[in-house]
Length: 442
Ligand SMILES: Nc1nc2c(c(=O)[nH]1)N[C@H]1C(S)=C(S)[C@@H](COP(=O)(O)O)O[C@H]1N2
Ligand SMILES: [Mo]
Image (cartoon, rainbow, N blue to C red; front, side, top):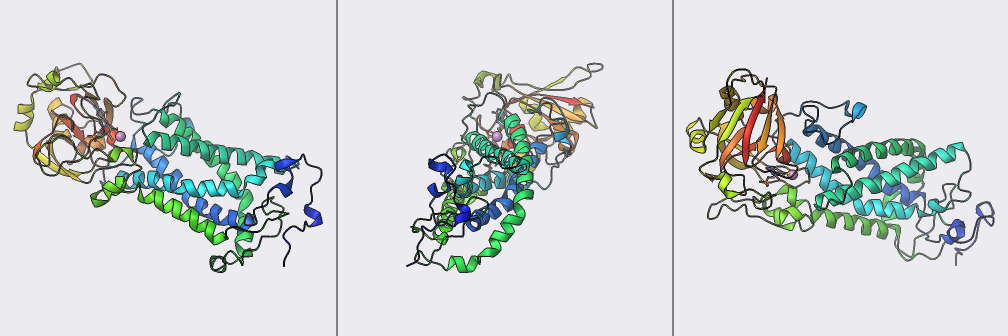
């Protein structure tokens, strides 16, 4: 019988305080550089996707267009990459944000296993050996703290729980930059160690190794493998299968909110998916709504026959704004576009058939033939989503509509009656419902 309790003399640490600060306290025989590196590699390929799709999501809000769109003021240099968010392809935001949210949820089990695998390092003794060591540990603080912060704020947001002291976007955006700064240092330091560790054992071979054949890794300078390993109770392939199954389960229970179709009902972890009716009673092709008229405090009397759309420009010189009734809008040239609604929270609708007046026709009517932007205001009084600014490019797209009808029926009150904005590839939050006014800027 092989003994698992022999301590190599070099790795002894009788001088540290007792308990977890002694290396011999950590006995899991599967903990070691190889397992940490496999989990690390998974995160190394996924986290840049999270970062990139996150930055794209911020760009999709067109924050440079208006302070009203920008919930992250003072971004300064961190907004260097911003560009005017395109209207095509129409499914782009649905894809990037679906990936951001689904991948983020899927990574949670991997992240937890990765943190477990490096737990002894938290108690490393002596805590600081050199300047380089101090720098490395500081970067870990940013990486671990940043990851915890980004995952926690992201998950709270998609669960529509907002215990934040300030805007979610501000926190999540700055948190992402702090996290990525730490990650870059961490990867620079650890990449060679990871490659060496991955080469130390064959992946396929490890996947063929059962519990009886599981052997500890030799104690390493990185403080991961145990100096006094206990007998294994699970193989490395068992741990990876467990983590993988956890990830797969989370993915399967959430991806339906973005995929739509028959998968929609499988998204049990996605709170937005549970109401699948938009109140268009009796019509085919009804679909879910995010915010109801009642919840938004829409007063039915304001949406009745007295409703008028105010269309104007921001330069007061010249003509007064035009007031248009719904009947008038319906007599204007009607256009149809098949577009989804895709929310920052990852859920999206399938394409719906929207019918209404082109935003660019309304711009022309206001006297702004080449508008730079438009401020859309809702009837809704309170709440953060009652206004948005759209870009000139968005206004001019022939599929950008002030929708009056959807799937062949008048909009229901919950879908935004009397009129709502629908713009291709626009984050859902900028598709304002219960529109009261459009103010074009040239
Ligand atoms: N007036 C108003 N418009 C709004 C909202 C709102 O709360 N009030 N929610 C926005 C958000 S966050 C999204 S994702 C879409 C969702 O459209 P739906 O509520 O019809 O599903 O509407 C947007 N338009
Ligand atoms: Mo949204």
